[in-house]
Image (cartoon, rainbow, N blue to C red; front, side, top):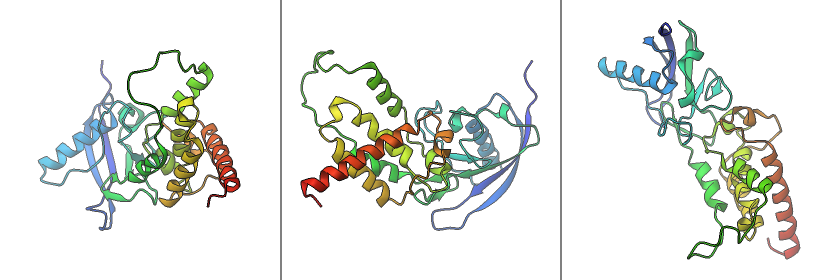
Length: 258
């Protein structure tokens, strides 16, 4: 026997474009299946709006499998909504009560300007990756599998860091709009491996510099970023980043570089 359908009140942030002022608009949506995902619920809302001749709500999405990190919504004040280690597309409507009012807004952070409705520009995260996300390795035929042995402990840590999907929830959850968890993960996934050693300290300088240049705040160890992360990225990666950055600055000082 299926669960009873939900009748919901939705407070949705509507904003025509980046230059226009925005406001919350309330919509009533009935007969929502508890088994539907949050994005499927928004699809139903947009179908209702289109049928009534109104503009649908713009929101980001792609894989709808918790992989791409596109579904950047703040739901009742929580990035990706209530529930641990899930993205918005993995949030199901059974988590909500019949008759509940749900407030839906874009990620709120100065480096993420709202482009339209629930869509924000997260290009600053890409700029951080571009600043240091590469390695120098020869091209050509692949090396033998065991030519460059890596301990399981290091490989596991690098994989944990690489699990970051760049959704930006850590930035939205942080009172300082800090991107240090994201930057620490993206830096560590390369710096932990032998292949990442040639650019390790240059990478630390460049990625932290890009993070600061794009207006992200500093970390004050509140821990909201780790709590909001849908992939459970650990604060340990911020500590790794800070150590690499400190060593990089010392090396640069003694090398006489500016």
